[in-house]
Image 1 (cartoon, rainbow, N blue to C red):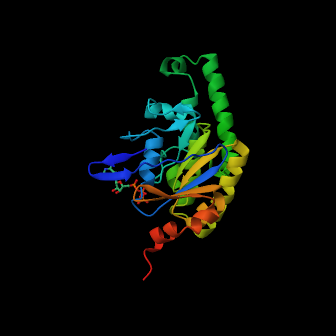
Image 2 (cartoon, rainbow, N blue to C red):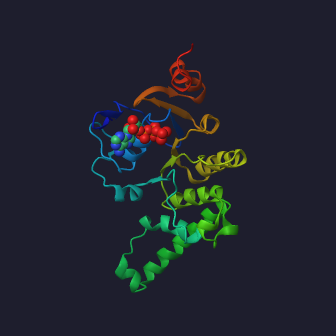
Image 3 (spheres, rainbow, N blue to C red):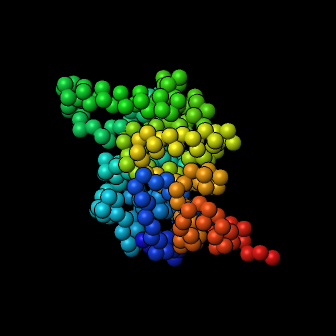
Length: 246
Ligand code: ATP
C-alpha cells in the first residue's frame, strides 16, 4: 500500500505478509511509517493506493467499528483504558464487540443476554489469571502503576478474542524487569490463545527475541524482511539506525 499526507509519502509501496500463528516485529526509526501502517490496518486511516487482506478478505470496505468483530484487536501506545473503572470492567468492555445484545435486550434482562454476560465474565476471569491481574481485579485502573496498566490494556484487547493482535509499543515506558516479564507473557499468550501478532516496538532486544520475523521500514519503504538474525545483520538496517559511517 501507499499512503500520502499532502506532499509526504508516509508509506511507499509497502508489501509484506504476516503468517498465521507468527509474531512479526515491525521496526524503523522515528517517522518511518509504523504508526501509519497500524492505523491503516485498524482502518483509522484510509489509504491512497493498495490493499490489505485478512484471511483472504479485503479490509478496504470494512469500517473501523467492524474491525474488532472481524478478529483484529489492537493496543495503543498511550493506552485506551477507562481510568475510573476497575481492571475487570475494563477487560469486560473489550469483549462487548463479541456480544449480540443491544440496549433494548439489555434493559429487558432477556435470558440469552444474561448467558452472554456470564460468558463474558468467565472469559474476563480467565484473562485476569493469564495476565496475573486477579489480585487487582477490583482496583481502579488509574490507581495502578503504569506497567500493570499496560497488562490491562493487553487484556482489554484480548477480550475481543482477536485472531490477529496489533501491539503498539507494548514495552514503551516499562523498566528492564517489566520488559523481561512482557517477553515471557507475549509468548505465553500466543501459545495459549493461538494468536498471530504484529508488533511495533522500539525496544530492539524485545523485538529480536520474541519475533519469528522482522520487517524494517525507513522513510516509508521496506528495507529488510527476514528472520531477526537476518534483519539485525542487514547493512541497510544498520545504516538506518546508526547513520552513514565516518
Ligand atoms: P514513531 O516511531 O516516531 O512513532 P512512525 O514510524 O510511527 O514514527 P509515522 O507516525 O507513521 O512514523 O509517520 C510517518 C510519516 O508520515 C512522518 O513523516 C509523519 O510526519 C507523517 N505523518 C504521519 N501521520 C500524519 C498525518 N496525520 N498528517 C500528516 N503527516 C503525517
